[in-house]
Structures are given as structure tokens and as C-alpha cells.
Amino acid sequence: MTAILYPVATEARLALSQPRGRAAREREAREIAGDVVAFVTEPVGPDYATRDAALDAHPGRIEDDRPGRAVSLPSEDRILRLAQQVAPRAGRIRAPAPVSPTFAEGHRWPAHQGEPPATVWRVMISYWRIGAAPILKVGGPQARHARKRGRDAVDADTLRAYTRQPLQPVKPQQPLDIGLFERRLPEAPHIVVPDE
Image 1 (cartoon, rainbow, N blue to C red):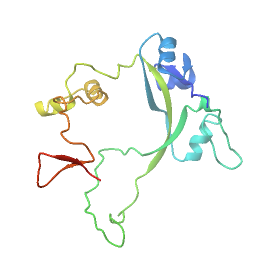
Image 2 (image 1 turned 90 degrees about the horizontal axis):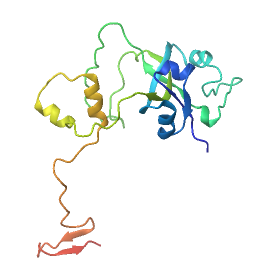
Image 3 (image 1 turned 60 degrees about the vertical axis):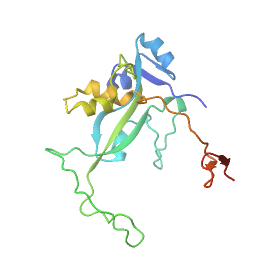
Image 4 (image 1 turned 45 degrees about the vertical axis):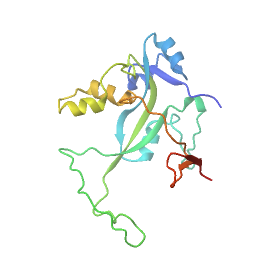
């Protein structure tokens, strides 16, 4: 199977219209960019009220399964996809009230009350972003330590770095004293025997 050749650009709009090149792997993208890159998926273009409107706005660039308009792209050109998202509302968004499980008539949750939220269709592009911060922030504090220190305001870049760094153990893991398929004898707890 051929790998997808993702565009290399500084922002989503340029990735769609004027990429510097295309690369399947990070190493190739770094060579094209001459800088660090990060793989991202971002929305590009306006919101569309229907799926058909989004497909009509990008003919031949997105997989289309509509009868009479079917488009099947080569695997290396599948950089765009459609995503249905909740439409942004003017003003403040109120979270729905919490509900309790009902466990009635074979259903765990009660039926949804009220109108479903309005949705829009967005075109999402996956590409190699040039100049993006490295994913790992080695040596930085762990997110859990920053949370325990206090409720200090955290800027967006720091929060992004917290979410992208791997979790580090608080202390080294101790070796297991018994295996997964072993057990201690009730009459002699100091003896470990295989569990059959």
C-alpha cells in the first residue's frame, strides 16, 4: 500500500494551496522544511451546513461516495476528510445538566430530552507543520505536579507541552513478588505455587 504524502507547510491554508513539498515520514518532512516539524490535523476553510455542500466545495479532493458523483482518490492524496462538529453558539455555551443512569427497559441512560445540538461540517487537513514546538519537553515538570502546586494560570503553550509529554513514574517500580499465575498457599503464606 502506498503511504499518504502529507503536505509540508507553516499553516493549514498554505498546506491546502501552496505546500513546500509532500512527505510521508517526519524525516522526509524535516528535510523539505529545513526545520522541526510536527504532524497536525486542523480545520481549513469555512463551516458548511451540510455534507453535500462541503463535498461540492472541494470536488475531487475528498473521498465522495454519493451516487453519480463518486470519487476515489489515490491513497497518497488522502489528506482531507470531513468532520461533523457541534456548531458554535453565540454567547456562552451552557453544559447540559448531569443525569443519573436509569437501568430501565434494557437501557442504561434515559432518552435524550430536547433538541439535538446544531452541527456543521468542517474540512480537516492533516499535514506536517513547520516550526512547531518539539513534542517532548524533557526535564519540565509533570502536569500532576503543576496541578498540585496550585491553581496558577497556565498559558496555552505550557498546557500543550504538559499534554504531549509522557508520564514519568514517581519512583522506580518495585519488582513483583509473585507472578500473574501464581498464588500463596493459605496454610503456608511464605510458599508460592503455580495456579492451575
